[in-house]
Image (tube, rainbow, N blue to C red):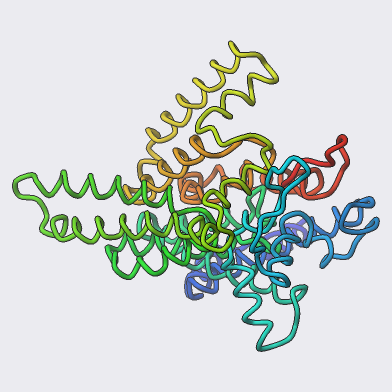
Length: 412
């Protein structure tokens, strides 16, 4: 009995050794800790992709059980590769009825252009460079996310917020040839520069961001909220002089954001000669004209009926309002809160709710910090395992191709 007890005693870390371990971990530079969390997330996502690929049957892109490189090039990855190889059409393709059909103008140019520039210098091709650019951009985004989170939280909470993003249900999007990771890098950088009041430095970053994904409108809304808040606060007696100095650059940043928001539709118009070239291409996937706010009512009405749809929409509005009133979300600060509010308003106005909605919610990443701070981080023991299960389901059911009817499968 004494030998057994002694063995157990030796295997139990002493308080001193635990403190020493914590000290060694804290001595590791924050960037290495962030990248370690990011790498762990990518290893898990890679394993999930490999399992799902092994389960994949024949699809429009490959035969059964494709390799990793082929599997991650499904869906919109193929459109980005087409831009990489062909560019954009100078004339919009049309069906027999003369309606604009699917084409490259729906996809923004920065990601495939960056890959193309790297290919010109390396000749490595899309299959290698596109995933590398996606992962590198996501790694950079993780570092910026941490710095942004540290403006509002301690190291441990900021690192936990990065973990929530790295292991999120749609986190595989950070390593496939989509523009999401590049957009996340530019968006988080823009928010960090605005949060640290470097408004002029944010302007070129915002322009690049608006060439990666359609984020100009919600960002302009967010800047508008910040401008009104700064203007209102600066008018009060005894206001911080920094608020008065922020009014003009915020106004100019709002102008830049607004112009950048219409830059890509303007380019599509100039190249094709059709004023609504971008909108007509986007709505080709919907199969119906753009109708702001209406799809959020029509989608539940088609399944549950009009009366139930009213209840669903009302519950969504109340739920979002309640979310912004929670202490965890309020602690994110005005910049992150303004962005999340602007982006949700943009989705309400222009997004057609469907299976891709989960991926489209990725830019709401500041909420990850709110999740990480609930219950002093203890909720992560629930959130992360649930996220991994949902991530597998998302890859297996949405990213993987499963014919569901005459039109194929639901997009991820």
